[in-house]
Image (cartoon, rainbow, N blue to C red; front, side, top):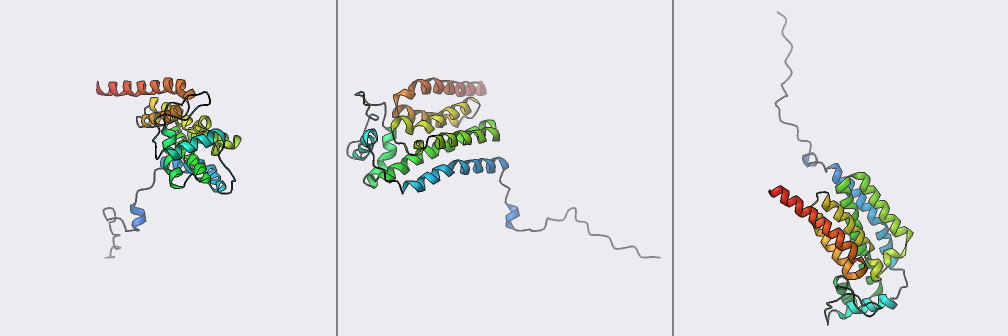
Length: 232
């Protein structure tokens, strides 16, 4: 009789071919890659400002000079209160001074280092704004957060470099508001950022205290209620 054609090998149970170590790694989740992209875009104006800082002929004066002098002197006499107010009293706490203390002491008060230290605080706060907006309400909220940061920086160029205590904490205060929103929406880790950024804002300038107090209490209450329900 006519011989039957050879059967094709059964590959259903065969092990997959080795296509290289690169394919063995799990792909990066799209949500993470989107967040990373938004963060990079957010940091662009701060990176530009950091490079431009080296060409600025800036010397601190008035309130900024008083504040930076206090940061340099802090190595000998650690401050326990905040920035001195022109009205004859100090703002609540020294966290902002502590942020500047190390860089200013190590560089003997180099002006460009003061600008870069301020930029680092604002850039970190801007990243927190974008990340928590993205985590809480999706890509559209993340894009809106990037736009808000860009608008603040570009519309008010001094915001990037300002060391004056009422304005240097504008972005930390924004991060506080967004993190509080995230905490009330179910992100328990956001409460840590609420505490840190809220403390920085209030200790730098007492004027932030009313909003930080009310919004912070709402965020803490929402998280505490959620924990209580989960353990009931």
